Length: 401
Image (tube, rainbow, N blue to C red; front, side):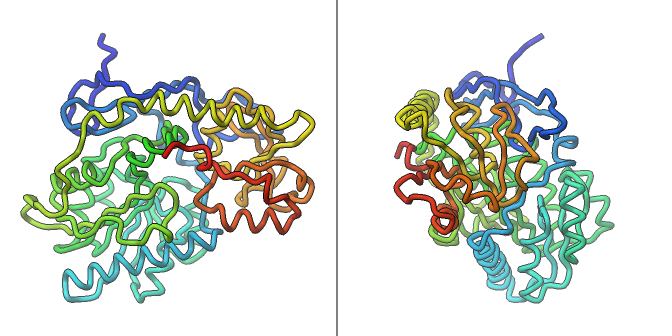
């Protein structure tokens, strides 16, 4: 029996391994303080296809079971709310300019608690629908008046729409979680109206490489694209590229690649695609990551043992960064606005998670902000709680550029 993996888009055997991270957890597999368990730990291996060049994690796990209990949301952030508003207006106006009429319906894939879809309602769109596999997030969405279908996004979902189509299909950090990206795009093509708009936000593999962001190389992430590989994949599935990164960089979250495309009948579109996609550009990614991990470990070692260290952010960046560090046990707690104190521990590293109400208890500590896309507003909270600005560091301080 062969141990060779196959490419998620073209089916070719994968031989070019870029990164190997050992015994890494799932980012949302938190350990309950009162119900300690043996969490999922497995090596992560990142490959680049020698045929189509797509960078990917070729290993699947039980997505249905995992996302059933997924709870993370960033809708509390004012920065994120502004982004969601901009994202809605951009896709709304793109549909209007391309079709000469206003959109009437929107579907969001991975809709979470429905926050993004609220902004389409503010624009006057009456028919919105979320697709979300997490039962708790679906309940939150529906309690806020945003209808949501509890389901993974596969080709079988089309049957549930009874012929209904949508003018806009949007997602944010969902497409790169999908086991079959071709199926995602073809399903989106099928459920869109003629001239409908597809928009998705994913993590940019060029930024992952430049910054050595191993924290984004997760079990949950299946594919890693730059603007060229994303554009090519979209064009092959019947779409015309309309815009790439249409929202200015200061208004998007860290490591964001946004693609906006239009459904067309003839998929042979030659617009915007870059011609200089270098298939060998990521070959030293593993070595770069090793150096960055060492850099953070050395920073931790430089802080006296009688000084406290805390973190901020238990999303993917926090969990995965900690899981790779040699001395993660120096962290006394990790703060996050989504959680209450003393209920959960981080997977693998077993560090206590705290809510913002306990900030003042640790005001003399050094801080590493994992969620560096929100550094400005997090720093304000820290300073208001009495932390020393000189002891506050964001994760991107250690990244290669």
